[in-house]
Length: 190
Ligand code: G4P
Ligand code: NA
Ligand code: NA
Image (cartoon, rainbow, N blue to C red; front, top):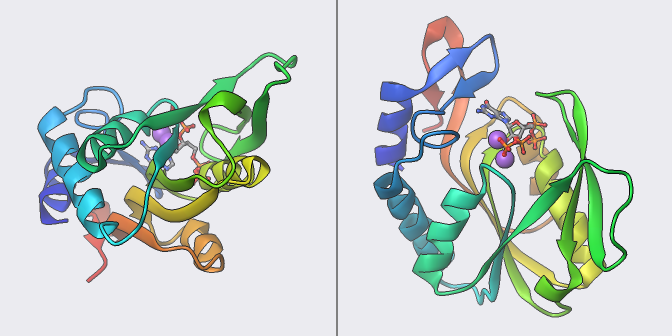
């Protein structure tokens, strides 16, 4: 998605060898017009799929997920991160280890908001090692819902997330695919 690639080139900041800061338009301050365009693009890419609901994780997945829900006219559910050890028993849960932050988050979705047989589109802001998406896949599996697609705003192809998802036989669409941050410059696939 050219609009997004241009914005990353213009406003993204590279941290070290593998982190891209996008807090001026996606992760802290949010550009609603860009998010609306992202929502429309995901709706276009998954137009051939029957989708009942969008599922993401708080917090940075929520903005692109909500705009995708707006374009597809379906509800959006975000998995909550729970820091306490005692979990309510009416939730589906998964443990998500973050390599970036070196913490494990317990994520959870209330049974009321995910039902057996529902067709789910997963959306997230970043695909790095794929742990967040794996956690969401585990939760949807527990609920016996069916994941029909995965939409990623920014994928880093040099980390292992894509490989992990390619093995699942689910359509994965990334709006920007970054191959490297060499020499302080963001390079995109194709
Ligand atoms: P993974 O989910 O693909 O395994 O990613 P990883 O463990 O590496 O990342 C953990 C957190 O860091 C996730 O956010 C993920 O979206 C974010 N992240 C990964 N790579 C980048 C990057 O290059 N830049 C930025 N800005 N974030 C990145 P989270 O812990 O779920 O937190 P939240 O920000 O959504 O609240
Ligand atoms: Na995220
Ligand atoms: Na994030």
